[in-house]
Length: 479
Image (spheres, one colour):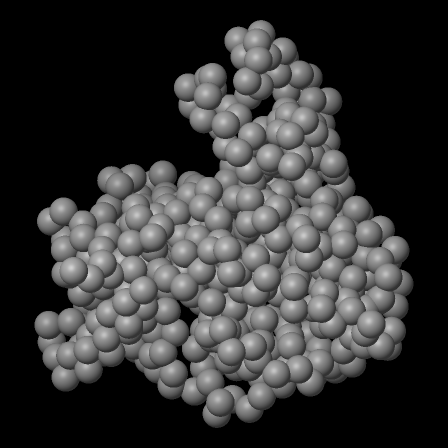
């Protein structure tokens, strides 16, 4: 059993939160004043990257400390390789006597956590705390949750909606729409644009924050709690006090279309950007309320608090959201702040870091070694900045690639020092295409240097291709 005086660990993941829209990281709009306040007693990582550009690889890499080409959960609704059912953050801390808890609004994150529930003392599905839950999978088929949940999404669904009941679907659609209209009218004052929700659930963030305060306060100590909230993922439904925010004169300079542009007009992108920023401000307000409540309970005095996201969001180059094949910074540069027990001053880390570093850093905070299968490194404040300086980190987009095949249809980004190399492989018309950006001098990634800075490009290309060849080896069929 763990020493009861060992520090707790609270991991707060806010889905689809890009660092590029956070005031703490230099965004012109003051979207997150409470996060800035929290940062005064935390380590702030300024060049932190997700493992992928959507929930499944981003969350899986955070939970396992490995890249998507290793854990192989890189497509929608995919699961971890079997060996990572016992090689993950929950198993590591559970084996050390920690009480472990996991929760997520997000179905894709739940698919991952459901497979890891053997190592969770408290595993709560989102329907248990939702204001409204139109799903049946978790109640009726808990042991077969993944299959049932995906079936609900796949069969008898109304066009343009998430799926509904497998039974009497047309009647259910009608009743659901009536119920939704009633609930939206009932809560029109606090949520004039709509009630936050996704995956056929409605969940005001206020309710979730209150629930977390109660759960954390009641958990046996020491605990590791992973709490994954869906906001600010679309649809962007901020609380009423934020819906008029950011109707200002500021707007970013438009960027040229990419070859994977979706053709969305700049005016529409700006409107969606503003709504997203409003939603982030709503999230920040609730985050501030959560931290204040936990502080009053005294829980934070002996708790490592991790604030991060699974991936970002994009409003440029004719592209909206994050399920693009591109790996520009808005979809993969995410916040990371870690507040250690008793930390009273701010520390800023500008070296490149990855979500695969979180697991080994938390273990090292307890004086525990990094498992041999982990691909991340220990970060400051536990280790020195020099330990993670100028190394290569990777982001993988491979949702169309076979799970048990070599990477033959994917986008891979390698960030090393000031440079980011992006490699497109297996796409019709863009197979073998590279892009190179100097993130220090060109943080908006406006100038592709692949053809003009060949010495740098060639060196990084050799390293990246060698790495891909290496990770492909277990999946290459030999004659």
